Length: 210
Image (cartoon, rainbow, N blue to C red; front, top):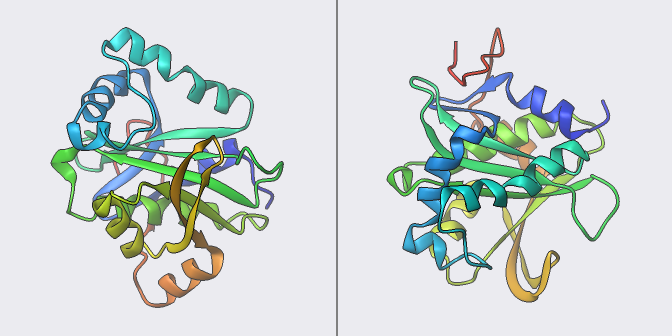
């Protein structure tokens, strides 16, 4: 099956992890999202200042909607299966430095209250399990500041491989660490029993696993 962002969003909602599911980002998610982005440890890692008001923040999310409309990416919310509570967001984008989608750019943010309990690894498992159902996807790449030890530890635990320090393609003035996750890495993790993903019998638009 050939990859498209719309088909990926459908595929990723048909799986659930032990504690979370992924669903499309909603406008209502902007409130907890904004509170998360204002946390000092997150704000210092950002490449640009974040909006101070909710109206500015909602406006700032419009490019993510345009990614979906133009088939250049998608934004997903990470929610708890038992309550539907928003706990973070992840995104998948077509790289700016290549026209194809064989390697995709990924990103992830978690609310501070949910740091250190493995939800980032679980979210990446769900994302990649859906991604590698598409025959033309080879892997994903993400970026981190060298000083962000917490994120780097999560990426390593998720099975991502450090590739070096590179200019960030969307803002080349910034040098960031690049971490990749390949189809082969996912196959090894699956064989080792580290991928715990289960299919949903039905897609629940509210993000509650059934």
